[in-house]
Image (cartoon, rainbow, N blue to C red; front, side, top):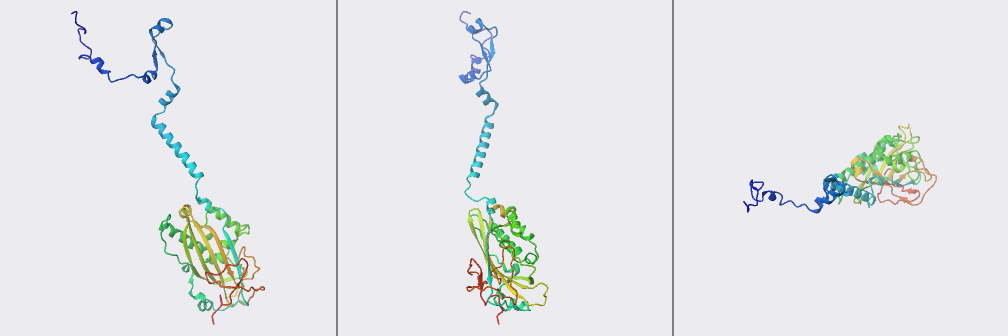
Length: 359
C-alpha cells in the first residue's frame, strides 16, 4: 500500500501514461496562446480584484482580418489586382497602332487632270473604241481586277490575306465600276465597306466639306448633267500587291487603269469617246477590319482625262467628249494607260496616241 503510486482504478485510459500520451504531439506555442479568445486570470489577479476565473480578450485587428479572409481569397484578390494593373500598363504603352487609329486622319489624295492634244476623237460604234486600240487587251468589269495568289505573311494567315484582297477588290468594284455610282449619284455600296469613322469622312467629302479629302479620292463619278455611259462594261487593267505595314497592320496596294465609254446625255446614236482614270490606292487592315469586313482607305492618287486643266476635281470628273478640246495646252505628255506613268503635281498632257482609235 505504501509503495503504490497510482490510484486503485489505474491510470485513466487503461494503460500507463495513456492520458499524457493522447496530447503528447500537441504543442501549445506562443502564437496559439496569443490567439486564444479567453484568458484565465492568474491566482494573484483573482485574489486581488476579480471574482471570475476568465475574461474575453480584445482581438488583434491584424489577426482578425487574417481570420476573416481565407488565404485563397487573398491570393485571388492579388491575382486580379495584378492582372488589372498589367492591362492598364499594356494599354497605355502599346507601341503599335490600335484598330481605331488606322482610320484616324483623312486619306491622302491627289487628282490630276490630263489635257488632250487637240480634239477628242470619237466613234459611233462603241466596240470600235474598245476593240481596235490598246484597251482591247484590258479585262471587262470586275473580271479585270485580278487578285494575286494569297499567301501567309509573318503575322497574318493566308485566309486573312485573302480576306483583305477580296475586300480591296470589292471596294474598287463598288467605287469605280458600278454605273449607279459613276453617273447615278448613288454611293451606298461604297459607304458600307468603310468603318464608322471613315463613313463620317466619306459623307463630308461627298458634300464638299472633306477639307483635304475630295469625293474623287473615295470614288469615281462624273458630272451626270454632261455625260452618260455609252457602255456599262468598264475596261480594267492593273495589279494588287500586299505586305505588312506593321506586325498588326496588313497593307493592300492597287494600281489600275479604268477606261469608260462616254457620250452626251440622250444622244443614243451620237459619237462616243473614251475616258481614262488611273488610280493608285492603298488600304490598311487590322484585326478589327478583317473581322468586320471593312476597309481603311489610306491613300488614293488619280490621273484622269481627257479634261480641261482648270476644272474642279473635288466632287466629280468633267470629261471632254468627242469633238471637244481643252482651251489650255500642256507640253509634257503622259501615258495614262501605262501603270508606271509619271504623276505631275498639276495638270498634264494626255499623249496623242492614247485613248484614240488605231487606224
